[in-house]
Image (cartoon, rainbow over all chains, first blue to last red; front, side, top):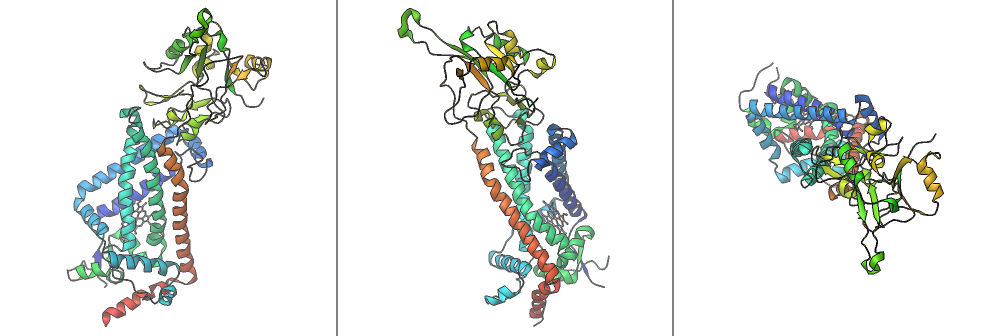
Length: 242
Length: 253
Ligand code: HEM
């Protein structure tokens, strides 16, 4: 029987899917709150339709705000039950070894889109440098979603508080919050397209996908995809079977 | 009948600066202290004229423009030009009070209401109109300097006033920002030099400028995913596993 290595805690799995669900809903409702032809991501038909559907832009705003607070509360809950998991995640994600990780990133992008031939042509070995718990692609996306998530949450709360505590003199903070909210969501969304492909569609990451439900990955996958992590943990006794 | 354009036609020479319009508006719309949705401006008297010195009074308010810069500055569409009535409205339930629209009005017609902490301005008294009444300022005016109606309806009083005074209709327009206002002064009016160029806050300008960039980044990311999908189906995934097998061999050495 292949050895299994624990990758995600139950709370990690919960917060990931909770976050993903919130993101989906916040994105769908949030894009509908943009009502200006200069910045509409998909055109004015979208906000128009969505607002009619929920009985007005005010209702849409309320729905968006309620989901947004649920999202923030979910994260606060996660931090209280699994602060160590969160600390581990942040350490893994923000620790980058530049030479190794940049080489991995560039090679991986070429391999995934064009294959190994272009690398061989310019005399580069197509082998990827070993990666730790997360590879550089995962780290880059995770960094973007952590920083982006904080910006989105903070600016969101500021916009919510606008008509509760802000004044004409301080409303510029609200206005800049709108801008930052918009930019942060756009950038994380760009990363999200690649994340969803790599995680859910790309066949080589299938065991990683399953781990987001079961919590663990088989030895083979750990060795091939996260070599540095594998060597660190394989000397420790690992969970056998289920 | 085609869509309406509610507007105000003003004979400012009739205005006696009684400020009845300002007060009745404040009462009708519960405008907080220190703010006003409308105004009466006065020209600077030319005292050199001696006993014949005179001042011209000019009633005004939001001009419900055809190309409203306030609407262009609003990120959510909470302020919009109503397609049916031509009135520039504020949807209070959607406005978050970011304040972008306030400097964007060349007429200073907008303010951040201190009670609701959101944008506020003249909306031609919808509650009164629903009850069959005129806007408060128009109803109150003792000299009937302010006339209100639909200029797209040829039978309305405002339309008749405009056609009667053809060639003598003045619009107060800022030289840098012509917003195509729907407030018409007939005969003569003064002052006309009090407008300010519309200022769209930097935060909004930045958002408009980075918007295509962000779409470009999302597009590139999407193209990347398509390229990976294409490779997955055309070349198969075994190919991309190749380097990892090398990896394994290298370790076994
Ligand atoms: C259908 C949507 C999604 C799927 C299928 C998905 C799948 C996955 C999987 C399988 C992993 C585990 C990777 C591993 O540990 O080997 C993962 C990790 C992660 N996911 Fe998602 N995810 C989705 C949506 C999202 C969303 C919306 C966000 C945040 C905006 C997000 C943020 C993350 C982060 C930060 C990680 C950890 C770092 C990484 O693996 O890149 N995910 N996701």
